[in-house]
Picture 1 (cartoon, rainbow, N blue to C red):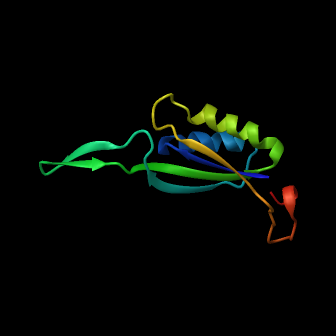
Picture 2: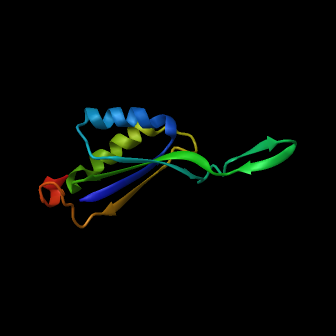
Length: 112
């Protein structure tokens, strides 16, 4: 099993959720985060003073999938959220040692 964590633009959340539902993926977690990468933010003017706004709103999505679904999930995310511009985000893949469904005690891929 792998945990796929994607940092994406906020406006791409709904299209990605729709794509996950259509592809029958379930069990995702979503958080609003702030960060910056290659964008480095922008300069804003506040009462005549330049202010560097380098923490940009993003969405963090986490989903755990079976090993054989990793590439399919990555391709789905990239297809839906890619704009070709700086700030599209990043995808991180981490191994998951175990998954346990609390309600039934099921373990492993069946608990997903």
